[in-house]
Image (cartoon, rainbow, N blue to C red; front, side, top):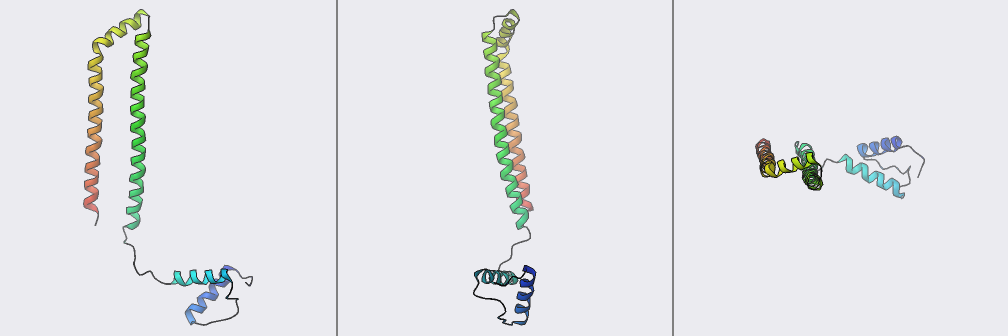
Amino acid sequence: MDKRTDSQLQEWLDKQVRAKQRTESLNESDEDFLLYKRLFTELSNEPAHSLSHSFAPNVIRQIQQRSLARREARLFLFYGLGLSLTLILTGSILFAAQNEALTALQQAFSRLGIPILFGLLLVALIQGADYYLLNRVRKRSLGHSMP
């Protein structure tokens, strides 16, 4: 293949397509040249089917939703692990303690433990319901805005 730049090849192919001329100045048996020529002819033709104007935003939104879902799943996992570890460590410290102040705290926890656990479960339930309702409203509003 002749040592020509891409711009020279592009100009040559432009002239060939516009004027429908065949010039034999380049070696057409070269695979690189044939690939470049095929690429140019394919790119110069309009596609038969065009994409809608909302295609790119829809794809970007789906990618963002999947990324958000993975992030939220990871956060819920960390939230659950953190809460579990906190309860386990608190319980083990209270039951292993021989100090009078910690013994008094253990007695207070034995009296208030059930209401505290109930309150934590209630807060977790409220957060879960809030998350579910927000997602349902968000999906419904996105469903109506799409053509």
